[in-house]
Image 1 (cartoon, protein in one colour):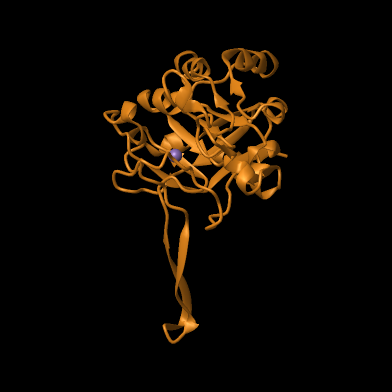
Image 2 (tube, rainbow, N blue to C red):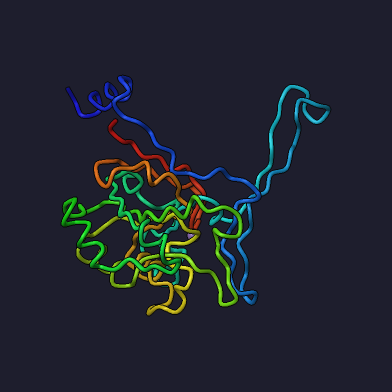
Length: 257
Ligand code: MN
């Protein structure tokens, strides 16, 4: 039997679950807030065009608007200055095979329950690999923090000195790229970087290093607690926006039951 026939048979037999790692697009879902001197990311908005009424008697539809970086979304290399000259760096140019691949989930939820500013280090990655095996080339690596369970103001966790949320240390991102050649890194928080990532070197290291290396980001993921550490397959295909730097998307994972 071919690999795809086996896959189709397993799906129809209920031996594979499809897990939705996506938050609902909702005007109330928080977006990243930058210092006021910078341009700001727009929340999701939905406007009714007609609803089986005089504006359209047999149909209902909406116009929607948002930032490329609203809700559960994908970051392309062109999002960051380090990736501005990366070939095929916009969402419309990325080869589609990059959107499907194996996924490793590094559980940092115990640490982030104790420390809002937790930084995942290469030692955390090595400890995970000692238990689960080496992260394969071309994998997506997702940092589980259970941050997606936070509601309202606790999600951005803004303080006087800015947002406080966990993320990867610069060395951890370098390790994932230089030693493991991952395809991308994903998080449950509003950005791939820690809330205080502006104080790291380089500032916002996940954005700077990932995108400079032509790698991708996923943020505002949910349901990472439903994924195994290894063995799932991720599907994350952004909208094909001309010269787009990112896109809201539906992120799915196939998991063996
Ligand atoms: Mn983004």
